[in-house]
Image 1 (cartoon, rainbow, N blue to C red):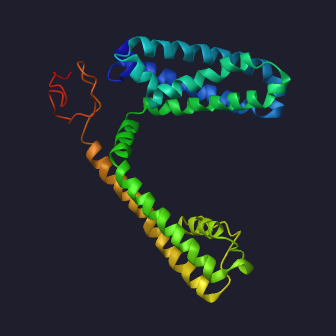
Image 2 (cartoon, one colour):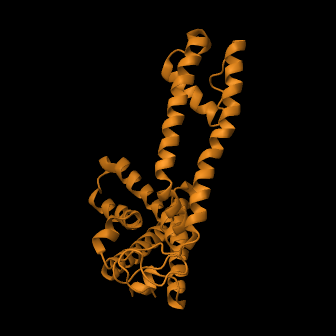
Image 3 (tube, helix red, strand yellow):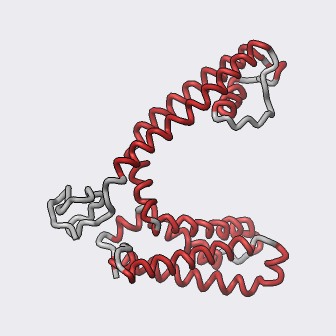
Length: 258
């Protein structure tokens, strides 16, 4: 059961993943349709039954994953384990809040069912490569984000001094907000420099923004190149993943790989 549920290197495993993906897409579609008032009024009962059918199916799947995982607690605390729990928990919690005074809480809990769409990533092999790449580059990304934060604070303070309150920069946080919007090339346009010197600084920030976008892209791409050289085989002895594609033994415990 573990091989069928967690791995996709067998016909049964691939069939299980395909069926689960179709169920996830159908469930998320039902959640989205339920938010449309005319459809909810006409097909409310059908969507309600569909919701409970999907919830029961995903509950059985979650229980099977816990039962077949080598380390159930590790799976339950993992990212995909939390997502699997969030995909079924809101439907059951709605039963505990039947009163009209809890209507807003119910709405929030029902919206959380859209977390099921995150379950799709667990069944796409390339998603594992992306997750490993992001994990390997987290320190570099953290340093980069800290540098960007420093730059936005400096630029926001500078624009506050240049433009002043008369031109909409009434505080340093307001200037930092403008710097973030401009540096990320979003450009809402709700606040803009009016003085020639301020517009000159804004031009430099806009050009700088294109370079800022390229940095994290290059970091993650480099790590993806390294991660793509590894496969997703799991060691039967210690559960380690991410071995080299030609490896015959686990890099952690030395156990033979399948």
